Image (cartoon, rainbow, N blue to C red; front, side, top):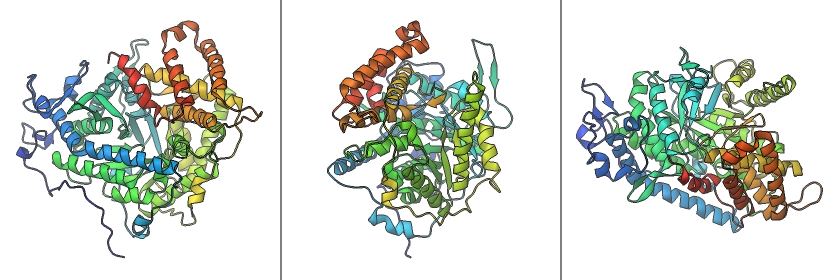
Amino acid sequence: MRAVTARKDSVSYRSGPQNAADSDFRTTSRSGGPPTARSTDMGNSATSKAQRSGLVPDAPSGPRHDEILTDDALGFLADLGRRFGPRIDEALERRAARQRELTAGGGLDFLPETEEIRRGEWRVAPAPRDLTRRIVEITGPVDRKMIINALNSGADVFMADFEDATSPTWTNLIGGQVNLHDAVRRRITWNDPATGKSYRLGERLATLVVRPRGLHLPERHLRLASAPMHGALVDFGLYFFHNATELLRQGSGPYFYLPKLESHLEARLWNDIFLHAQEALGIPAGTIRATVLIETLPAAFEMEEILYELRDHASGLNCGRWDYIFSFIKTQQHDPSVILPDRSQVTMQQPCMRAYTQLAVRTCHRRGAFAMGGMAAQIPIRNDERANAEALDKVRADKLREVTDGHDGTWVAHPALVPVAREVFEARMDGPHQLSKLREDVRVTRADLLAVPEGTRTEHGLRLNVRVGVQYIEAWLRGVGAVPLYNLMEDAATAEISRTQVWQWIRHGATLDDGRPVTPGMLNEVMAEELDVIMGEIGKDRMATGRFDEASRLFLQLAASGVLEEFLTLSAYDLLSGDPS
């Protein structure tokens, strides 16, 4: 077979490091050591390089924000924004155009124009030492206590999440960068003012991987040429700029999870961002490693191509099951034959979910990449021993399915689940991964990926969607992105399923198992009743001081709208404007 060559962006990349004069943001340490992310002439001048670059924060400064929002760091972000912001906008328009085509009667399928890549013999770059064992990965937001607990949890990897588990207030985002800056240098501490308990890092820490926001999310507090920066560039850029060199000095590297990708062209865009960022800081190409979350239905048809585009930077694919269910509904929103049952019935045993996860294992192992399993969202049930045992049994069964299918590791949301998941995986693995398990028996077709989950729609399922959705949105509006609800750790993905599923039932006149159609009137009645239920659970005072009025109005607006909004977090982001941060 002839060599397959990816198209390149118009930006050219020189081999080897740049001269210092080539960049405003690549600086050299006073000792003559490697490039660092701290300007040697930082100062506090109002006429800074950041201002000259056209990128100045439009938000109150918080504790230690000046250590992150340095002139050189903002100059680096401005450069990323100018080079790649227009390409992100083009990618988002491609998404919208494809959705319009699907709505007009088009269909998803494996791409004929990339068949040569799927047939070709190629592999991703070998994993760095500290990413070769990923049996248990724990995820969570970037608050200080969470970072310490996750790094100390005994997991192999900690994914610090700027996306679905973080409400994007300015305080959360820049404070999160401060926290990661300290964690990388092993000097992060936290003292709980309520209990007096002190939190410190232990000796053995999980490998740190960072998930920036998706391409679709803006950052209104940083504007370039009057337009908001893309949140993905802000989160990636600040973490990479401040920590890449230090991570390399320690024998690790800048590692990322990439969320919400919908095509290999978006993977190509990220690969070009990586190449440029590495060159700008004088870091060898291929230093960055990225795991892509396959959490959209379109991406499931382009797994091979996504790995190919990122092959020098790729370390694997992850089965982001909750967002995948959300995308399954959203992508096929126009089709009345694709109406899902209750969310609780869309399990990993459904044929479409089995097909997508097993295809990920086969694809990854053929290309030398790791196939990561999905989230176990359970959290300890401390006041009910029997319920807690049942929850742990569900976790074990889920992880047994994953390790048997050939996954190299899995996700958990709580430190208490780390030993449970590890026990199941290590009992059935001969080493740190299962790359040799090629799963050549797996054959997945278009029909397999598009098979509609079977089950019932119930009043209980409708009420649970409303109750979970409203409580999550309310917490998100208060700046909390990971919320324990009914013994599960919920993030934006499950709230997206909740509101999208209700929208789908109303839009297509779906009936519940008792024969009643789901209507806007029924939703209004259920909302009023479920708000009373919530008040009974949390108390009248807490209800009055929260943002439940806004959250319930937003849920009703999104679920009963004639048009399915692409992401609830985009609509909810406008409501965060009332937050002083």
